Amino acid sequence: MWETPDWHEDAECAKPENLKYSENFYANKPSQQYPALKLCGECPVRRDCALWALNNKQTWGIWGGLTPKKLRRTLSVNWAGQEMRHKRFPLCPGCAAKTSSLQTKVVDRPEGGRWSTMKVVYCTECKFVWQSRTSANAVDAYHSQEEKKNNDD
Image (tube, rainbow, N blue to C red):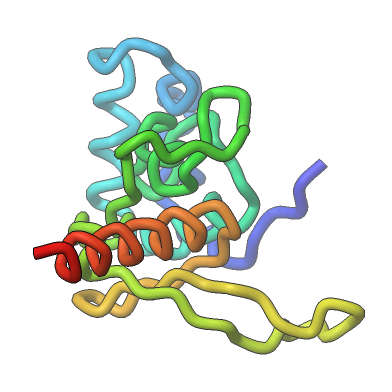
């Protein structure tokens, strides 16, 4: 079971009057997802929520205004959570910037341990940062592909 993040009490979806929309966050049809997406659009902790979902590899449900499809695309995984690229590269979940605006960098893990560093993806436009090995691999693959194209020209 997940611990409730600190920011959750400030979320629009956590307000008692909005609990009636809970099932909309896990609906399959876009028309049924609309009330949840509307709440996310008004939410003061939207970015925190999206970041939590990405860092915890949450690919089901709507988190921070990201649908399951957008979460999976951002994480570069398929519906089963397996890494994939196939000419589909992530967009920034913070501002929808194209992959050309995303960079990867290695940072120290706050908790240290055996693996003291991790790769993160960083948006140069809105400064949104998330930790995902599969996203970082896809962004690196995109830049390698673009570099190869430029060198071939």
